Image (cartoon, rainbow, N blue to C red):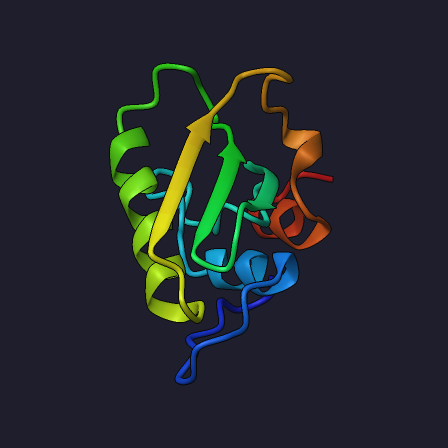
Length: 112
């Protein structure tokens, strides 16, 4: 599986950079980052200072949802230049399915 990248320099606010930054956030129950799990549906750059992340959780009643939401905001503010506000929206449409995972995540979990 691709390793999460710890950045030392802040990155410009682009969708790809935000997605790369979010690879630092692991689902604590599964131990794989939320991007490779397929939990991040959309990244919307509202402005250079505000980013919206639309994502899901593996289950609607996931007890770690608030923790993941906080981590998402923290890593984006820490690693993306100029971001002051991160709006994390949870959606369950479409519901998460293991087919949304990257090939690396599937291999790590033994799903073929």
